[in-house]
Image (cartoon, rainbow, N blue to C red; front, side, top):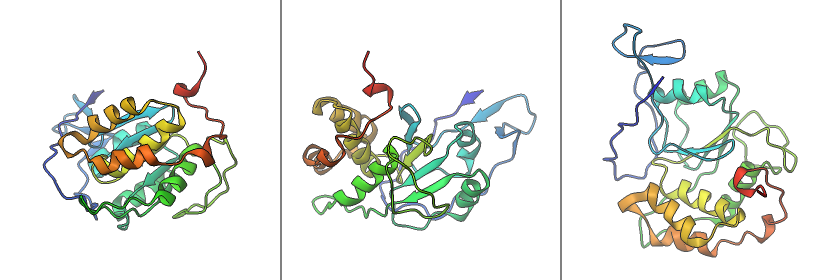
Length: 222
């Protein structure tokens, strides 16, 4: 299996995608190079990474990423953009029994950034498996510490700002120091890192979620 992460980061626009390109030919759940079946490529979405056990992050996936996503055995996707989900990706989620949770966070450029703490908190609850109310389809009730949402993929458009804020708030719950949280944020945001995002994470109140038992590797006592 080969991973291809050669996707260019040449798009400055934070508006989420409305549709993906036509799907490439694939066999056995993997993209086939040249159609000769001797080289198989799985293509992760842009900015893809593992956050913790059962939690992944990325930019907006397109149809070329679907074979790779299928290998993750996803149960849920947390989508942080307000635009409708592309039909081609929605059909993939439905066919694979993947729950889609949408939290429509508008993204404005500095200095007019206004990140809604209530939506970040609701998205965190879904990530942690707490009872939720904002579900796009396939409704079901999740009890505290229930990980049936996992594996879960968190994404916005480029996997930088909205996703970075949500993951940063999760790190606060995991008791990471701020310098480590900001280092991780900047690693994904690169030259597009925003002071306003980091300030939001620094000031985000996790007190209402502090008593939530977490079953993640970074939270386990050694």
